[in-house]
Length: 412
Ligand code: KG4
Ligand code: ZN
Image (cartoon, rainbow, N blue to C red; front, side, top):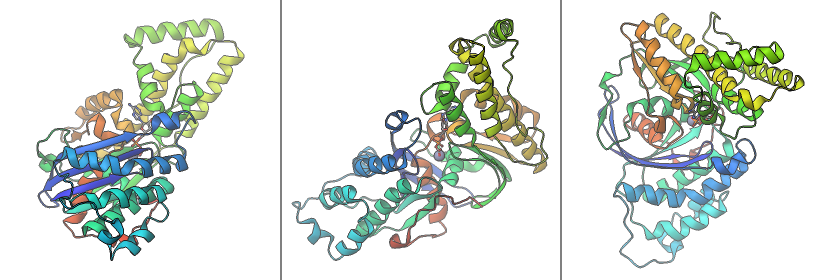
């Protein structure tokens, strides 16, 4: 089965082609192409994602990105016939197409110009993210998927973005089939992104139960917001990680920096690990964010040059987040006798988190750790296409005209 995946839930526009084989118990995947265009530079200016700007960028870029993706996968062909009047070619579907894309005028214009000039590619299914995410952004991908499905006469599957992040751990970036045989169930997935932090119990593919989630800010959001307080650019996760890594000989340098701080302010750079010992599997990162805010305020009042301490502060923020994520995940894995722990979402790209998870997993004799590559941890359409396979094998198709954005949809 060849699946074309489309992802536009936040600030990455992505189209991927994934070849899949096997059934629901034993799926395996080969990424033929995975083109991702990040808008972070555009949003960085505003300190976070601006939904209407994200929507405009997706509209402008989806078709060129899809062509690039089809080309990479060797599935792109221009039609042999001369370009004709698109209305004639797309007739009698033109009316429906017009109504599907009428909220995306820029995309409709490109669609009418370009789609009639390319041959229907040899794909079997279209998979598109329908939520959770920013609704204006989600709608662009959804309407595009609906329009393609209609014109190319292909079935379409509606995908939950978090399921995509879960399945990403099954993919390899190279052109080899990645067999998921080694993922044994029950599994515990820790999904950590810009908008979500959740622990999911997976009994089999398609059977998900959220056993804990954040009560306020997500882990990625905590990285982003505390980075902003430190006047570091969006997105915060990668830059906080980079700053934290500046402390090479960690213990010594942290000690001496803290010593220096103590001499000037009587202060210590120590942040709370919210809910680390709570009985449930929930998280809360807004308290951590507030603790950083007060710490910086106090330092400023004492005329401390914060720049001197940015790496130490970043290191402590990162470590506080890692400590909570690992403690809760290991606890859940023990309680539910998990045979696998799966990581997913943008924060799973964090090198320290990955390294410390690898160490902690050794505590559990019969649990394997499954990490997506850093590139596949952040938003991309290959993970959506792979999740699409899990639904296509069950023929869970949606009528293109009935696809809707579900900004707050949950994995449950
Ligand atoms: O999954 P994702 O790409 O998009 C959403 O679905 O939200 O996750 C984005 C989040 C952002 O908050 C970003 O700061 C964080 O993932 N992130 C990281 C790293 N790379 C991205 N956080 C920590 N360390 C990283 N290396
Ligand atoms: Zn995501």
